[in-house]
Length: 206
Image 1 (cartoon, rainbow, N blue to C red):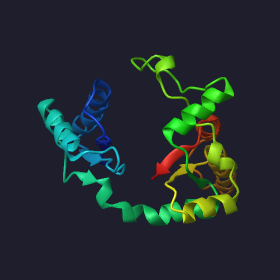
Image 2: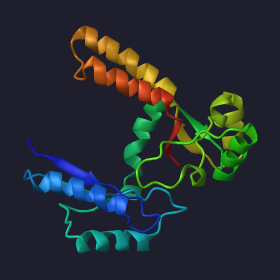
Image 3: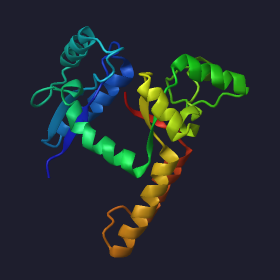
């Protein structure tokens, strides 16, 4: 079996130490086993991504001695690949449009009195300097309200309802387990579903 790893930075800024460490781990995992190391540019955020950052990221990787196999995949050139999966998630009822801006999310959380924050890994910014977690505001909107705002041309992102998706995963896993078709053992599956249920809704498309 060929080991294939990939590094997928978003070109919204320069390469930092965390990026470099992640790329180094992936590169070694591939090169030490005779596998492939791929580079994918996550340039789907048109408002924040810059072509000069793409060039600088690639230049820094080569300066670090990290080469890659094949052509660089730019996600902005493959958006059509994600239409069908997004439609499937929509049909499953696990994604919804979110109209919140970062400023609106921050204001709502501050108004609530206690802002929930994400984990603080080693080397991350202090808790008080990081953005609060999304509180699920647009998840509560009715279908009529969502459609009205989209028809008015209001900008939105698609969020994954992590709790609902985890519940569906548990249900599907149980069926697969009964049929003998599940590859994931019960313990990791239960851990993943529990973690997913405790995470805020994630943006999966803009």
